[in-house]
Length: 104
Length: 104
DNA sequence: ATAACATTTGCTATTTTAGCCAAATATTAT
DNA sequence: ATAATATTTGGCTAAAATAGCAAATGTTAT
Image: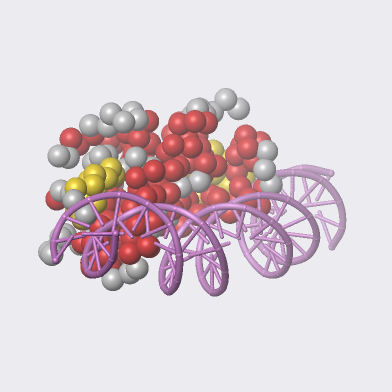
């Protein structure tokens, strides 16, 4: 059988990105960033979890290349650098009736 | 701070889908299905892993609503029911230069 | 220099996921 | 009915992900 197989390296990168998005807190973080950059403290307040946990989640997103960070003063601001993830989420929201790209 | 927060139920569903895609074997399965339905045995051969493992991966994809299964004769065929995941993968493939939806 | 604040990193306990084997189930062939 | 084939499920173990606490780091204010 010669079914299409994608390059291993590409698969690994895609998996890393999907993995990063595969957590409720991180996914909400991404969506909160749709309006623009946010400081770490904002996430901490919004979720009411430990700072260290917030930081870890953000670093998962950063390592996957979904967000970038910038230090200004004593704060660190995160911003979305891969806005297409919002498209993905929007697409998935139309549950069961997803015609995006009508790939068929 | 009144940042946008998506409905919890929607988030959970999205997370389930991303989680399903967040594994190299499953992601390749999805891409193999882009050409059309495939029998379980094809995946088994392609990956050389245990049948039970193949079956488990497929059920993760099915529970997430990404594929559907149909039994015909003594075989079970899986097919993609959410082709937009292919769009997502294609988008992520343009590493670092993803302008899809130009959401910015 | 010291203190206060914001964030990250090291460590540990807990939970979740992955993958195999063996057993169960379902379908077709004999 | 029995055997052979295809797939799923239960049980188990190893590996990975999550979350909190405490300590470390870097930045601004005193």
